[in-house]
Image (cartoon, rainbow, N blue to C red; front, side):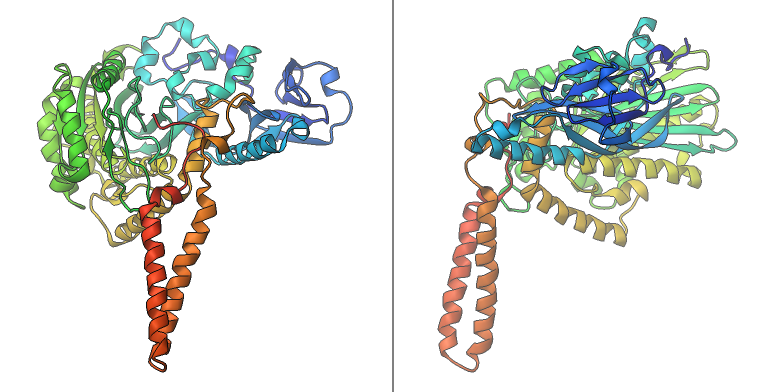
Length: 589
């Protein structure tokens, strides 16, 4: 069997007819109309397709492109379906699609028998499902698994490729793992679509006279899934926030080259709770298990990827400096992992992309020894990647993406020289058309990953796209920074709850406390009051000052309203955390 292929026995059904009856939802494959299943709208039970399942005329019929799973809330079962998709390229010869829209379908009406608190809770859970429907960056294939990198695929036995796609998939990177449990229980193998969250970018390179396919695939881990400010650092198992495996794949004249890099939050226990300030204070959580947490994290990396070089791009002063110093201290206890501290902002500033050569000089020997994965057209393994670079800054977004793109460029040059496309003195940067495509893919990947974690496009995108900061890029970064501030302070609590719900970290049950009991403080009910006081106070103060020139009594009013405004500002500042959107469902660790 050709490397990268997948057994056609388990090609998933790719289009469905959805029949919405009053008592059931029926899902039929358009390719094989006798294949399908139904879900009872009274009990939420899944049943095999039968004549009874499709009898009568349904009130509503539509076409969908997959069932992403089910979830049970207080009022019953909801089914997540893919309502539109877009083909975005191919992975090892198989089409890959991006989810363009999804929708949750309610299966029963038990809510009418619920009490007022349960109805309030269900309304909150349903608002979280609306947030889930808008999840960005979800990819899948009906014909092959895209969660496993090329090197690992080639190491697995042929029997692996004959299994259903959901069994082939790496559970770390299956975004809807929790939602698929009932479909798996009922053995609906050809209907089960593992969704990957991350980024999939592909382009065609000319490379002198050697056409090539260049693919960039990032896989976001679900073990510590969350938003920028509400999921930082590691948990006690050693899983880190925003952990992403990025695979750069080059297909050229029958050869396939794959190289991996990873990123992830600093694997200590730490937090950075939003409090209305632009840059909330970092706090390291002192815990007796911290050394074990770091050790667990890097042991897992070693088993999966081999020798690890940990590149820390954080600042070496202020809060970041304290966190970086704590990280460095723990890394001294791990003799088998090389820790490299590189103050990106100090060395590269805001525009000196080329100064990353300083970092490369530090790690180049070990980096090149780690190698990359290479197979020929017959599937024979010619080279293997024996280690991995793990990069991090604070968010593992902007500085990390710039650095990873630089290292990826070094790898691509080495691969093209190895394949004889380039001489030893030729580099991708010498071929403008191909170089622009390379940098564009890395920049777009950075934007996509940033949208998933921080809610905005990446900063420093110009450094990746053009190798320097432009005026337009500076303005765009400023707008993105302001958008991040707004999203992180006033939206991410809801987004975090939605992620905890869809990932199964929080399970809905009548025996569990209400989300409103877990977090009784209604932050948004107080925010409008505080905003009204601030805006009203500033307005009245300004108006009084304008009138003071005509009437001295207005000076007193100005002083009074200025005092009220200052008091309101002091109140909001002192209680900043209380005015921000906070998760209700789960504790931070």
